[in-house]
Length: 210
Image (cartoon, rainbow, N blue to C red; front, side, top):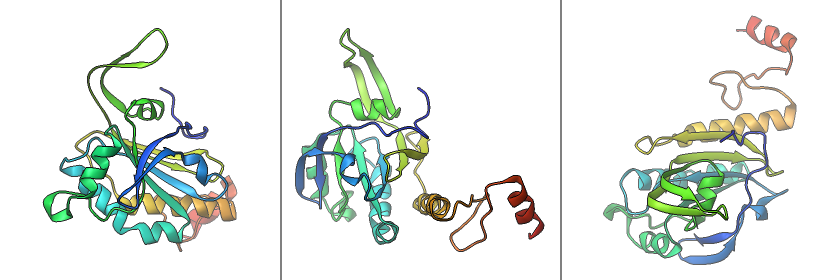
């Protein structure tokens, strides 16, 4: 599948659990268009081991995302009932109680498929619908979507590899620096550091200042 970077994020409507206990039947990322950037991330499965560490890490950084006007949304191929049940289990017992951002239920597996993160055993029928022939879950995909609904950053990790919330925030800062100033951000750039003009001359000036 071709990269989604630079393209419109796939649109969808699905059930989701928000604020820890509210089930929303027709949740869509379209609600953020023109209003917020979106950090949309997939995780493999509820009631597992690495996944809650990521979900809690993003939740603990929610104030930083909100400061940047970024909506955080998670997604897995579990049902909304499974999400709701896991949200009732305390953190010290392996649960995700306290998570406030929405968690989408990709029960049809089509959201994961359209974002290019679906793994497992499946095939397409004559109507181009997914037919499971084995277990299907999502890789640890992460997508940064701008206010126009365009994917500006994509990261896909294999199942054992957790992600860095700090790097996600750094990437958001770099994108917003570019949007606000037209500058581009070099390797390991962090908010508050000098960026570069988007030209060869700008690169030369940046390097000469180091």
